[in-house]
Amino acid sequence: MIEPLLNIMRQLRDPETGCEWDKVQTFESVAPYTIEEAYEVADAIQRQDLVGLKDELGDLLLQVVFHSQIASDDGHFSFTDVVSAICEKMTRRHPHIFSETKESPGWEQLKAAERAETGKSSALDGVALALPALLRAQKIQKRASRVGFDWPDKAPVKAKLLEELQEVEEAINQADIHEEIGDLLFSAVNLSRHYGVDAEQALMDATRKFSIRFNKVEETSPRHMKEMSIDELEIEWQKAKSTT
Image (cartoon, rainbow, N blue to C red; front, side, top):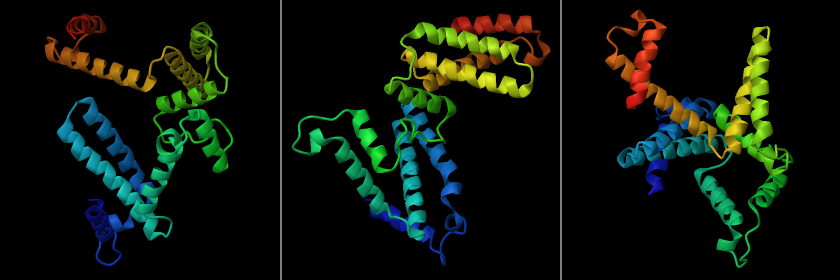
């Protein structure tokens, strides 16, 4: 069933008869759309919209086909190579399923072997730079923790968070404030991890909760919000908070 989609992309990228937009795209120009489609898949799942999920998965698959065709046009690899590579990786990572051995090596052992094969040696190698900042911080911290670079319990993590907040208050110029707020956020992610909370999801949930309550204030306030004092807005906020 994948062949019709591959043919469509080949036609769109045809140098002579292809689409003027599609045939000039590059990995770099398509990448933002790939990220956007991945988020739209996650959004459909979050909303439990299975009809929408089907469409979004198709859009995401198109992105894989698009990148593969660009690579094929430039003589690097094809869609078939992409499929072969992921099949090989999945069977290699699950020897207890796809081979005669019944013992599964540890995940970190497998990942370390893969990093060694690709010339990567650091425990932090391979964490994508394009990940959302909170998610990347969480992954970096998790990688460091796996090799023993971590606080033993929550107490020093909490203390570090308070220390970073104090350093924000003591920062003098904008550059220092920028750096200290970054440290504060990184420490907040670390605290989330020690509590077993996904920082990215927690922030998404908090933002969604804020949006719902803010919309409620907009709907129920007696006047336009710009015309109200902060004390009046706080009263309306508490009303919204009590019902959402």
